[in-house]
Length: 275
Image (cartoon, rainbow, N blue to C red; front, side, top):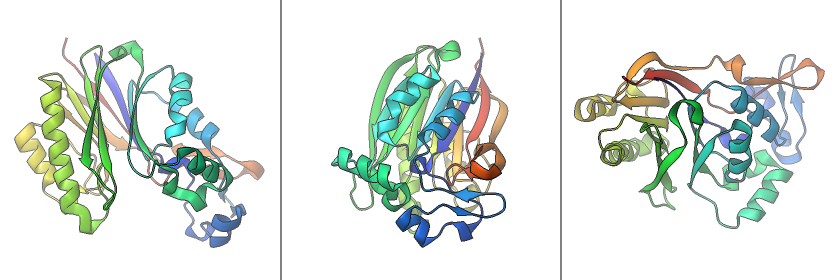
């Protein structure tokens, strides 16, 4: 039984061109599309583009962070998946925030509100049998952080989180990862477990991944410089976690240009469960 897993911080559904010169103040303020010879910065709703890319990708379980809460139901239907959404921060007055984001996504940015969304396709792992939320940091300072624990009908469990960000918050992020590991392994109760998301700690900068491996048998982080990881317990790694090439998350735009989705690359891996 092979399970294809994906994790992706979708940057609140926004684009992020590789040329910093395209990320201008006038684009952010006035929605002016900036261009160079290869890419565009569009500051427009990219709901369709993200939907196409996610629905057309090969995965059995997908873990998303910085996910626009209002997209969850429609995207799950497009993917033929069951959904588990846990809200994170800045979700008060949701209709007003959504309106502001529709008018100017880059100006509103993360103030639209966010969520961690887990999608489960039924072909390999069945539907969702259990949903459990965990508040890792209550907020508002630093912002609220949550974990979505999901058990599939096949018994494979996932824990989806977005840890606190920035070097000053590294001890906080490490504590959140520790708590997430402890609680998700407790809830998994011996079932296979995938802990994934934007963990906001690079292995080269911290010993937390060695600790998670020694204490909980969680392996293996993506790469020494990576923030996005898929850690597993009770599964054999067939294809280790690896980020997509940058071009793979690009879509065609007008005039033969490309738009690059998100400031993070998706990370994918394949795991195997005995029996």
